Amino acid sequence: AWASQLTIGEGYTTGELFTSTAFRGVRLATDDRMLPDSLRGYAPTVRGIATSNAKVTISQNGVTIYQTTVAPGAFEINDLYPTGYGGDLNVSVTEADGSVHTFSVPYAAVPLSLRPGVNRYSLTAGTVRTPGVSGNPAFAQGTWQHGFTNLFTGYAGVNAAQGYGAVMAGGA
Image (cartoon, rainbow, N blue to C red; front, side, top):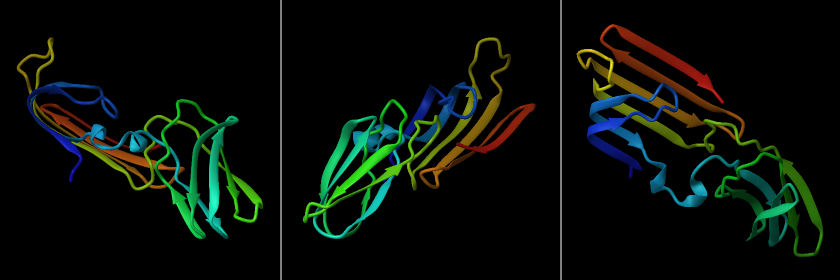
């Protein structure tokens, strides 16, 4: 239910928001491998309205990347596979009577972007086990990311150790 992985023993923090740290301790973190392939990585949610049973075709840079049939009314497509390149998504809605209406959804594969409504977190506590660091100091790290909209992902984190502390907040 948490789509997370628990690590007890030796491991590494991810390095997404703070520098990756080797540790000995406990880590609970979101694991995207528990999601279907179509929900991993960032891709925007496409919303539109069909006036009849309609065929929706989504293309990017002239290549069809998704096609489905929708019922009359509002529709939402939130399971697009992430693509490795940028470019607006061109959406074509072909109605039952043959009429077609099109619109565009802006898209760029910006690092740290998450799908709307998606959370990613990491909680780590233990000791640092990096060569060159004397005494293996205790440390704790927590990070959180949330996809607010197609256009904005927020993130925050805290990292604390003996004689060291860092806090961050930002967005993509």
